[in-house]
Amino acid sequence: MEKKNIDWSSLGFGYVKTDMRYVSNFKNGAWDDGCLTDQDTVTISECACVLQYAQTCFEGMKAYTTEDGHIVCFRPDLNAQRMANSCRRLKMPVFPEDRFVQAVVETVRANAQWVPPYGSGASLYVRPYMFGSDAIIGVKPANEYQFRVFVTPVGPYFKGGVKPLTVRISDLDRAAPRGTGHVKAGLNYAMSLYNIVDAHEQGYDENVYVDSATRTHIEETGGANIIFISGNKLVTPKSDTILPSITRRSLLHVAKEYLGLEVEERPVALSEIGDFTECGLCGTAAVISPVGTIVDHGKEIHYAGMGPTIQKLYDTLTGIQMGRLPAPEGWIQVIE
Ligand code: PLP
Ligand code: COI
Image (cartoon, rainbow, N blue to C red):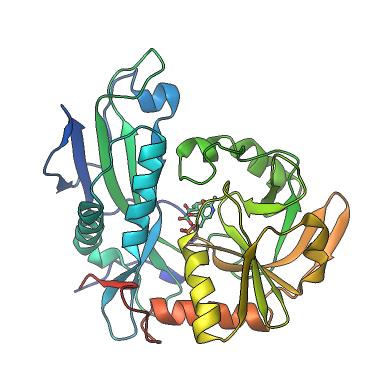
């Protein structure tokens, strides 16, 4: 199969229109059969619930070309599960988890020419999403919904590739106790836009959010969870108001079972972040992006950037994803 003529290694994290996407509609209480289409635009009511009240959620995962030339996707069943949770929290109908995985597989397969080649440093980002599509003016959930999946080839999420990031402790909050921080609702990202633009204007790569109730513990960044390293130990914040990152959950397993590290998932106090030697942001888009500096209101905390342990975690995780290392049972969905 011939690949598209793209300079894969110069791709950033942007949208490139690909050939096919998946669409299924929910109406009269049921999902239709769904299909692939080349239609990349969406036509909905001016009063659609998503436009008025932001009733939308999404997922993100990646497909890769492996060392031996297969196309695979990493743990799509967990994305299906998380999207089902997001839907329940937003009073949207769940798109059945097995159909979610099937839709991802079909969409990636239909765009096989867009899956970056092995070794190019790029991957195919897969974006499933759902929104309330019929006209709603009183505040209540929609009656009709659309579930879609599109794909786009991407390079590194942060400008400059694996250059260590400089991030700041944010003064604004992302999630409230008992709010929606633990689900992948579009609204969580809408309200972070002001803050990310401001962070960039001030010279920071990302915002690190602290818990909004006490402002004493580290939560996550706008688009990734956080891991810290100290000696032989990986420490990552445990909180009900952060997104349960599939990358982070996978890294905990990798750290323990592949690298023999000690693993702690627990509240991480702002006052202890100077005790760690390495820090990284982890997520589908971020993979593991090393942090060089956290700035806490003028106080700088420095880390090793791509230090030895973050490097090992990165090599092992991407080794599993790209077929260089054996994967735990069920982690790799072979597409073709
Ligand atoms: N936290 C936030 C706020 C995110 O947007 C993401 C991206 O999906 C993550 C964490 C990482 O989650 P995952 O590893 O499942 O991609
Ligand atoms: C992802 O990593 O899939 C995300 O959704 C993060 C987003 C900031 C691009």
